Length: 68
Image (cartoon, rainbow, N blue to C red):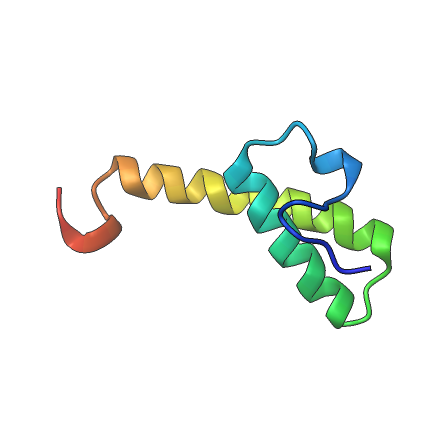
């Protein structure tokens, strides 16, 4: 079942919006590739946390957008 930013797995409920939205995006892509729902949910959340964490570090170091 594809998810949206308003209808997502219960395990995403208490996540920050940026993590939740990215997790939904990743999990939906995994489902499209034939991944089982439970695996897609867990993998989406794990990868979204990593992605958002890296984005925050990049932004803090002034690397995003080329300006410091």
